[in-house]
Image 1 (spheres, rainbow, N blue to C red):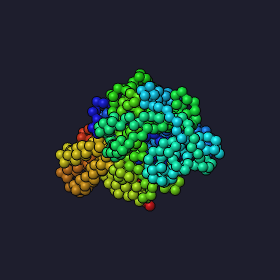
Image 2: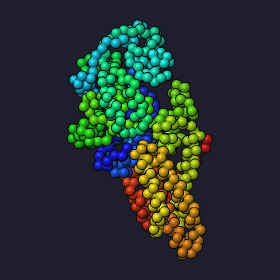
Image 3: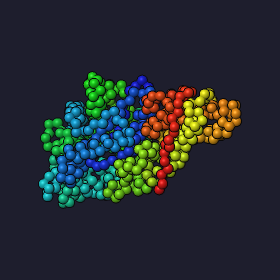
Image 4: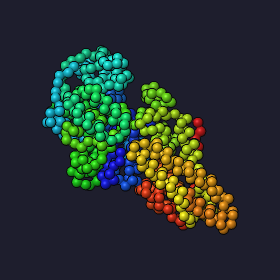
Length: 542
């Protein structure tokens, strides 16, 4: 999606659910979003990058009960864990909040009250699973049973093992209590529903123009065409945002979680010392482009439930939803319980964060499934990062440092400028299409061109052929250093630590992270001192 450069951009990443540690499946959303933000800034956009921890809901309560601690303690532990992981991976949010903040509670209550005032919320008595052994009503994740649609084993809110359909309270068959294992029975209780079905016409029109990836739009449109069912938006829990006027119910986690995008924007604005009402520019006045990065498993929530809720409460709508494909491990479905998982902290103990960032966006298209394997990771590192990029950096800088010590004189050839400009244009188109693999491929092709150009011109032979040969050698080295500079600028969005090293070895002034893409076409300055190069990447063995 092409965004007017004069319009501010608000980019969000889906909120990680903080009841366990970060694994590489999570990163399929956060790393591409961070890369997108970095590239937009290099294109001249004003961007705010927002996320935070999703802290409410039944799984956190279950986890707390299993450990004999409070939900607050679980949240605190994993909230800090995710913050550390994101910092180590250079996923740099402008603001990272948590949904149990006072501000998010206040904003959630305000929006729910507005939906009630506008006639989009109604109450109804429904059948709710009740455990006679535990003597309490069971929230959705406390219940396990049989899916009424496909017959597979399902949890109370979703058929997670079968058809994937959202389940409302009371729909699951043969309910059992997940705490004690007893058979549950259904009893009536009053709950509140969001009238999602009344938004069908609006959603059809909205999805027609919504930007982002086709998988998000097409998936959502199919649901709208089939049937929209009203959502129960209250749960029997103490941990959560209290439903207005009720002490015995909290709002469903999928109400207050996305509202975090709004409240975190408010908190960021306040922290920057700006007028607190400025958040309205992003969420009330349609003066900002809003882009959500999510996984395919939450398309329904972000493309149907969330925009309907925003529309009903009078807020701005997301302009684009970018949905990543899911992650498999060696061809097997990701599963923590079955051991099909790669934990991020363990990965980073062995490998540089930039190698993981590179792999996550270069291995497959953003919307396609990513099948992680150690063999494919080693291949990407050895063949591409070592064999192409590392080879270009080391051989060119070593030759230039040894023979000149500075960037030599010379003109940049038309052929070189043409390749750089082609890379820049292809990279921008790829970013606008959310095709991060194409972006990386375009830059790596420029690096490959640099290797071929250096090999073809054989400067190591020219430098031995007298004054004329040495003069031509200077020109060749100047041109290849220009290619290296042009590779470094866009690839900084993908591998910020490693490209900072290259930038310094080139003797460039300033911070590569703040350099715009247009600088790719600016000739590298003759006479600037080069630094003695060091190896950028090491080969990894199986």
